[in-house]
Amino acid sequence: MMLNQLSLSCSQKINFLFIALGLPILFFTGCQKEVIISIPNQEPRYVVNCLFQPFTVPYPENISLSLSQTIGFLDSLSFPIIDDADIQLFYEDSVVGDFGYSVKNNLYYLEGIHHLNPGVYRIEIAHEDEIIIANDFLPNKVNLDKITINPLAGYNYEDGRAFARVTFTFKEPEKQDNYYEIFISHTKDSSFYKLTTDYPSIITESYYPSVMNIEGDNPESLPFNDIGINGQDVSIPVEYLLPFAPINGIIEPHVIIVHFRTISRNYYLYKTSIIRQNYNNEADIIYGQGEPMNVYGNIPGNFGIFAGYQSVDVAFIINNNEIIEYEF
Image (tube, rainbow, N blue to C red; front, side, top):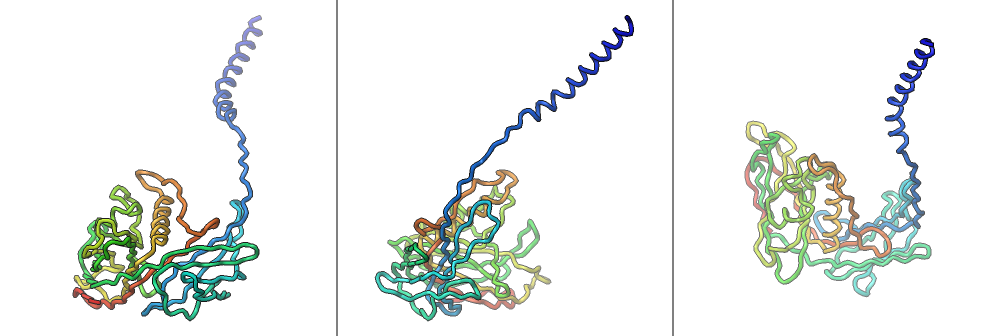
């Protein structure tokens, strides 16, 4: 009788132990639910990329255009390149020229066009049974009055690096909406310096990183509009970190190319949305990752950009710490 009671007691303990250990397992495994997500097949759409400007010295370039198609969300193939489309550029109602395809670069080129008047331009793309039409306005060029370069403007004490300052001086045309872009590049590999500024018209742009964005990189391009500066005399200081440490307070000789563009509204919306998307894709120590956003485009029923700009590009050889003033 005692043996039976002992056996029953052991059995009860084993059952209790099984329940105590099994309930948490059942809790975590029993809450799983299989969710089937149906991703509909999307018809391929065209992707157009064409930023055009007049044939401008000292860095003239023929107008180029890339054309591809989208792929499915789960496809692992690269974007299909379209190489057999018929493409024409129009100025108002007149044909400017026909694009030809280059196998070497997988781009369409419009060659031999050395002058483009400001005004409305139209691109027409015919491929198979589809015709794509997009429009943009090539703005009047706003010329600079002066570029001032301070090759050793100060030190960034957070990382101990020296920085240079480039100041753009110009008269902003009044009674019209204008959009601009500033960037500075190396000549060796055409990469761009990361830029900072304290100019109100730029730091109030939605893409410009706030002081709370601790881990965000500075932008390589500074697009901005003329709100608050319309019709004024403008001097915009832009700073970039030197790629080397000065030796005994003397900088090394180097070359930079300074770029100042007058851009269309479509160009402005496209470029600012790209910068914002790049920032949103990065994780921030305070805010985490930002909300996803689409890049602006103006290709009806498809994706991409067709936008014009006018450019002022000047190369400078910087040999020492002396301030450079270049007047136009």
